[in-house]
Length: 107
Image (cartoon, rainbow, N blue to C red):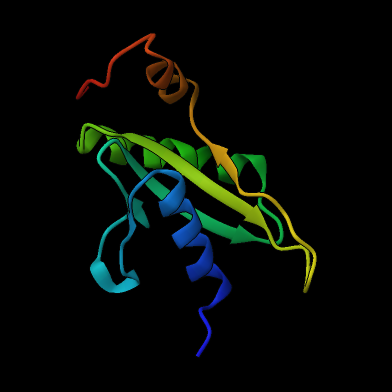
């Protein structure tokens, strides 16, 4: 049985962060985790900027809990045979931490 598209996306995002996909029934609020990142993967036809912002804020908080950076891997579902890239979305604070401007703190 072939993987569903959302499982494939979760595996792709896990590869991007150098980690592994967590099982859907694990009870975690995250889809993927590595030594330095936690991630949520979303395969969507549409998603508002407000929804994406809220998701980025939520995963950033999950990252802080684990002393890691939180990112969202989002991909638009355009239809059969029409490819789209995975976008990596994060808050500005996460981006600054990634670049070394700030450090991850439990606040």
